Image (cartoon, rainbow, N blue to C red; front, side, top):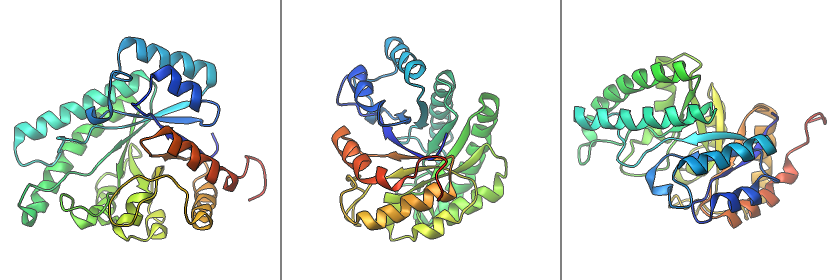
Length: 271
């Protein structure tokens, strides 16, 4: 599949209605696994999974998944909290495998509350958890992707600038581990997007805008020339990747699709 823009599933409308609206414009849909994004409209019930599979077969779109992250700390000092977080991740990955999902995005661990000075301990435990997670990923044929984060007190700054991700790429050279680059997070954190795009094993992208202060996940409506250059660069450098329009409202996603689609050259045309 050539580079394309994808939709993040929204929980504000019935699943069938959502799918009817997006399958004609998007080739990839990202499913959430975190409880905060689930609702009666989508909670992985057997009927909803059946609906997804029918639409998948009919319209030939692909799925990715964003793993759980609220109260899910793979680097927690408390072994029980760490084990519970790992179980949540593995359960979500098993569900992803049932839906033939191959790309699974996770967040880096948050710091120990009120104790940023011991972040290295958090990271050591996180690395142990990732090693266990990758054992499952390999058996399921899934690639685990770590996402760069916005500038927030709960995260160490090196989860924004890519330095933590580079450490993990060195520690886990297997192709079952890679990166999701979130353009909106980089903008909010004041990090050079170009520097992140130089990293290895980038498989996936998240796209949204913000006011450079708070991670708001706004639609793409401003600075379209700049965004157009980014999209052209992604199309050229990552021809098999997908960029998910990571906004909570479908109207914002459709507006962003309309504004960005002209910058994507159809497959087969000269760059």
